Image 1: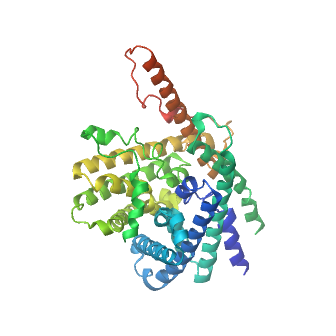
Image 2: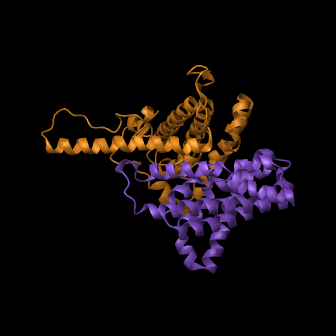
Image 3: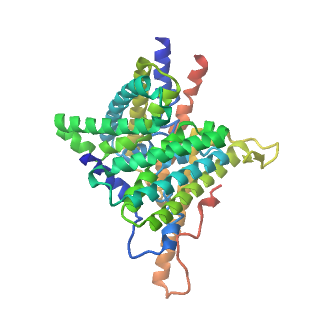
Length: 192
Length: 245
């Protein structure tokens, strides 16, 4: 139990996928204009992460043990198919949500956070349950980072920003400060 | 697979692309600066930030990506008439993943320490948007020769950007370049530069310099339009981001 709790805290805060490990930056920089969209995208990501972690556990256990060189290819195919399935399910169950997520849904495939989760999980030999907790933590961390960024950017719309800093430069500098804040969580590590 | 088309608008909205019969020279050079994949198109930011804490890591990552990009472009371009439109993205991803696996194994054999330092990021070249973006926006529509040139240019542009980031971060963060001391023993390294926040701040800084140079060019252009034209040469290439430090 302690181990599981630690995996969760570590993947959500100490090694936050976006702000500490630089994964999933495209979404982080591109889609954080409003809190609502950021939150939805975060949830979609979380969902795909959990599904991926499950499938990867199974794949690792049954197939890739004997063919480690197929890892990258197998993972990417699994992720692409999962995203397709999730997309179809959302389209069927909630057309409104589907329209709102739009293009960003298929783009989850190329979100490095998902593939990275699969690889980390394999490298660390997580069991099925550990993998699920890891995915939950990573997804939670993503949601946290996306909403934090989105809420700052919503406020920034009313700020007077110098022309040269408009756009990505400013977002990156904010991300730098957020990342600095998350560095503080590294202190948790020594307590464990 | 139909929905995969959704990926197209983002990857192909890049300002690059074939228009007005560009020469081979332009195919090669546009990736280096004018359409630099990282600094202008803002693609492939994850590796740009994650592995650039030392020059060696930056160069290895850049070269690995260049390799994957060139060979993927070669194959995608060669097979472009055979790949059905509906499954093209999946096909590209499979081609890319194959070359990433090759690069991964080669690096593990050639430079084991750096391979270890880069960790999962070598495998993550698969999901580097630059590569998929170039296949979709260029290699799928152009001849083999032009696609390879384009890939070489974009890969070189990516490598150069990583190198800039790596030099800045390693110099300030560890006081060294490629492990050799720059400032002597009394230098107190800015540890923050090699840590994650340093990556964000450095790229932010580079983009600030670029924004400044763009604004300056626009201002100059305006002035030139107002005054009678002299032999003022206007190009975006004048001020390199290398000045950032």
